Length: 323
Image (tube, rainbow, N blue to C red; front, side, top):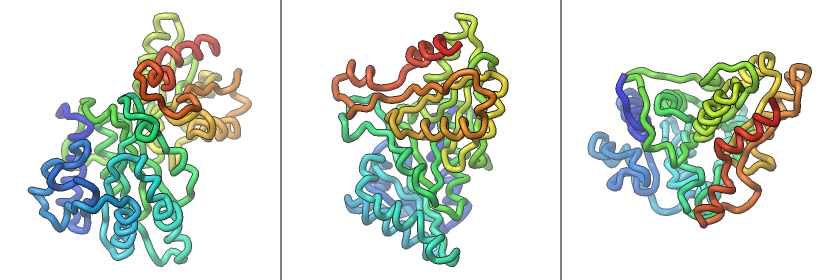
């Protein structure tokens, strides 16, 4: 398999699905001539033309609203938000329209829209541009929430998302765009709701998603040197959520750590922990620990930003205490 970057894997998925289905089109700020804020749509305008790669005005509310209308009309729009932080300006369209139209129309209307958005901290972009907002979308029934970690999953999950009849929030961590990995060519689909067992272990289960999967893997390697065998699970999607994979792992390890970059309070990891308690309480030998971003606006200062974000060292410290 070819070694390509996360952004190239996304670009490949977009090109393949636009070739497969002429209803698929892309819209967003600078997605055409500039190739996207993170160059994910680079080259697609030249291949598919202005009707199918559409630069839009700077208005997230309008972009998402137009995408919802196009989806209801039978097209398959892929809306790119320059950053998930700007998605807050379109929350009425996302939460009150995209998520609810199928239900409120009694199933007679569908909204097969994919909303792609970069997110995450670690780049000194300040408090308003460094957020991880997956918990907002996970909280809302009617939205599929997809959050891939690897280039292969980025391609496979995006292709699956485009083929959905449901609205999909597709979240990409800004730190992952340049990461390379093996990616199957051609028809590669990854199903929603199926977690990925990244590493087998017997002493503690580390559950994560997106960039924090790699923090978890580095922590697991450090723990191995101390004689602690950690299992690592990448959730891949938050709605649907593969709690079954978490429970099966905890039956073996009896201990769990939830690692996520959203704020600790009310984060997606808190919901995952709650569902594990409901499904596997009798198998736990200790409370589930959470390693997450501190409950503060993200600092601009580099040292303070690092201190606010979860790290492999934080995971190691918690695992040592648990085990």
